[in-house]
Amino acid sequence: MIWILLLVLAAVLAGAWVYCVLTVAAVRKYLGVRPRHAAPAEPVSILKPLHGLDEGLEANLRSFFEQDYAEFELLFAARDAGDPGLQLVERLRREYPGVPVRVFVTGEPPYPNAKVWSLELMMREARHDLLVMSDSDIRVTPRMLSVIAAEFQDQRLGVATCPYRAVPGSSFWSTLEAIGMNTEFWGGVLVARMVEGGVKFAVGPTIAARRRVLEEIGGWQRLSQYLAEDFVMGQFAAERGHGVILSSYVIEHRIGTQGLRANFAHRLRWNRSTRRSRPAGYAGQVFTNPMPVALLLAAARPDWWWLLIPTLLLRAAAAYAVCEMVLADPLCRSKWWLVPVQDMLSFGFWVAGFFGNTIVWRGRRYLLEADGRFRMVAG
Image (tube, rainbow, N blue to C red; front, side):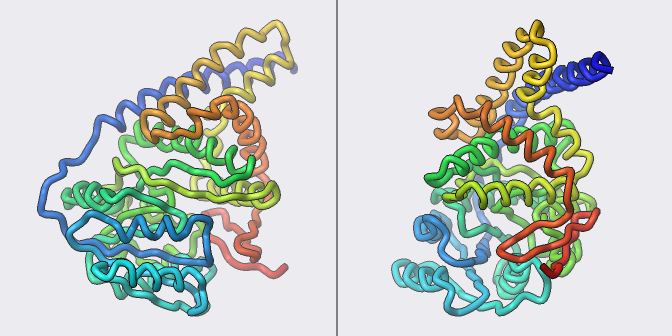
């Protein structure tokens, strides 16, 4: 029995080594595609849901006011008029009088996904067909809209996901999570893009899409049924034959400072949601994290300790390719020694994600259905 277990672990480790090689190849393939920056560029509506004062919110919002782009508008929405994020928007609007800005108060959402309700109301009022939907914890450079608009000159394109470089706050746990996002998570997205012959889903806190595509796939009312509405947005668009891509523009995702409890709850919610959004892909994540498997083998057979050496080298190569070549991430560059620590923690959360079907989101409990939909439950 022990030999069967050892053989299974060895097979998984071999698969993880292959996956590391695929990650490097996927990075090279992604970097080989860049848009032509040709005029004219079409006007853009930026939709931003707000909920309180995120860490660094002023700098995040200011970066969108400072877009070096001919024609764009900013739309903001919050649940109530007293939201401090809306007050900050009013101050920034006075500083940038040349930027068209509109503000909306949504009230209580009619369905569990409050973010989707905000996006639905803003899309109704948006003046332009090309929409950029961006969370409040995102920071960009002035050229963001120029790059996205250049990509959307391809009229077959329906949805584009912006990769992000996670930037943590001051806590140790946020630092570990950012390292995981910048190595393991985006490595998985890039490999999926390569082996599936393109992107068949959308992820992340900044997505660009055409209004007519969103309407064609069922609109926000359909998307509101899912916790991972970003994922299914790209999935539904791809199923209808629209182009879905991973944008060449990398944003900054300011994940803020989280203590242990809040960070662990967030990670568990993410893993449980991912398992239901893409069950086969979630099971396949066993190959994305070679270090825990190699350590298990070395613990069971100490004479196989040498397996740790190629595992470390291949994991380092994959992490370097994603962090340095795609994301230009200074965090992993300076704290590379935390990557194995994060890998062990990530493996634990991956296992935990197979159990349980409830999550807590913004103080409310929800039940996750098998197909990725969710609904509020008491307690």
